[in-house]
Amino acid sequence: MDPAHSCPVIHWLTEEACQRPDIAGGKASALARLARHAQVPPGFAVAAGADVSLPAVAREVQHAYHRLASEPDATPWVAVRSSAAGEDGAAASFAGQLDTHLGVSGADAVLEAVRAVQASAASARAAVYRQTHQPASGSMPAAVLVQRLIPADAAIVAFSRDPMQPDGYSLAIHATLGLGESLVAGSVTPDRFTVRRRDLAVLAAECGGKGSMVVPDRRGGTKTVPVPRSVAGQFSLTEAQVAEVAQLVLRLEQVQGHPVDIEAAFWQDILYLLQCRPITTAAVSRSAGGAEHREARS
Image (cartoon, rainbow, N blue to C red; front, side, top):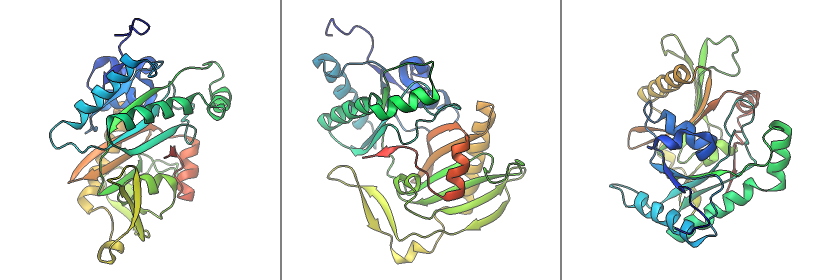
């Protein structure tokens, strides 16, 4: 390894060190801690402060991608996302401040995406946000999470306590077909399910519009395609899947010790946890307006 960099660069989500926010950042450390309670897509964190301009560091990142992409049944696509210290926390979510790159394929492209995410964490926009929400933290380098992209059949955002029902009687699930890019960007009207927390009874179900959905593009990135008419008017989740999401979000609330806001996806009938963070006042606004502007997408 280059003598200029002696600390470990790669921390897999299955490793104990990845549970440390000072090493892996808020997003990656949260997923590493929750991997025993939910199905989390395989991935690794590029440690906070890792200088990917160093040849030895760059090779480690590329080698980790090759290992991730060569696992059984793996697709070549990954999601490259920021994982700043304090990100996805109760005080500051960094929603919309740092970059996410979806559908990245190939070692060179992954390395370039890691560089871009690190640059976004050092941007003036992120600095202003950090100063406003975390004035005591100063300027801290962000870790980067590289995770296998789940080519979702259905994408989900769920709240363990419905932000529009502060009495805590129900939980809320929003879902749509395809990747979650359209859901978190608010470009589709999602299916909405209101579920009673006590017994998981569905109190209300509203079918959203499904004129289009986002899918991985084999040339790189993502693309928007029309939804077949045969399924456009159907719910994106079955009754059993609604119950499974409800069980997951309540379980994570119990584990975390506070109400949670999650992103998840179904693929081949398996429910994957993609993100988990405390419910904040921003979540109330997102739930009311239907727009889930969480991260800058590329």
